[in-house]
Image 1 (spheres, rainbow, N blue to C red):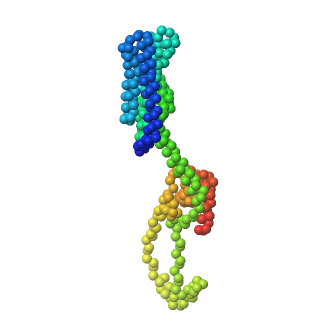
Image 2: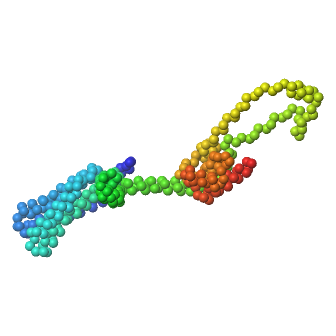
Image 3: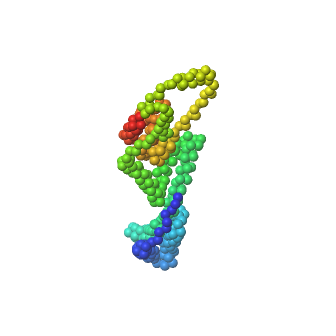
Amino acid sequence: MKHPPERSLSRGQAWILGAAAVPMVAFGGLGAVGTYSNITSVFHRSATALGVVAAGEGATLVLALVLVGLTMLGQSAPAAVRVGLWTLPAVASLTGAAVAKSVTEAVVFAVTPMAMCVSAEGMGLLARRIVVYRTGVDAEAQRRNAAVMQRLAYHRARAANHPDEKARKGSELESWKLAKKVGTGDALLGAHLVDVQRERMTAGADAALAGMFALPVTAPAPGVTAAPEPPAIEGADEEGVTPPVTEEDTQVTAAFETVPPEPVTPVTPPAELPVTLEEIAAVAGVPAPVVGEPLTDVQLVVVLRHLRYSDDPPLSYRQAVAAFRESGFVGGEQRVRRAWGSLMSHEESEA
């Protein structure tokens, strides 16, 4: 799959994103200061407070920097990093609630470390969106889709080949649940699907407009040539009257009648090769009709002509329409009827 070309951030975008990142870092730092102050008020020792801050907000900051670095490199973050961004602040919150002396202090001590968690997640999300904007590649979405497709492939194989019927039914149900998750959050996949549908809609609209505005064109039947004129008889007048027979001619004829004719070996005329659909389309000056694709009015006439004379005697309208549908060609009933009328009109003019 082709990726879109890389785009660079404009100066305004860079300034706005930088300004958005400053409050994230600032409030994460304020959360660490608040946790330090809360623990100091209980233990009255700075070393203990620093240890709690380092285990909670400090470790969360390290994981946040790892997440941002991997995202900027276009790589997905391991599960341990993503889980740690929420687990470590939660541990710090529980620690603060446990050492608090009252319910009010427990609530305050538990909420304070969450500032670092939100800041870390916000910075990781912002970095991810910047990478997706510039490169068009969402490594995190690709990781999720790869995991879903791997599980889907396993359950489809299990549903088809597992010896236990209960296991097959369970995998069949799980496969349908996983099918809903395929492509979720993948902006690149969605953009490609939109492009595919746009091309199909463009082709359909082009075929519809061609059918509306194209003028019916009639073409002579391929392989049919005008009959040659009979050679002129010497001595015949302009009215085609045979000249009188003289006595000399009668004597010559009688002389030839006495000679027995030589045996003549009958010659079988070569079988006429059937005319193909491509040849009829070439004579009509249109592209060869393709099964399953919308046809213009002229192409409909070409297909009906080919089907009508594919048998001897030629097919009727109902037979030709049945053969048209069985062959897989696409065309509405009214357009096919108009094309048949044009074909019949052309045949009458040839007759």
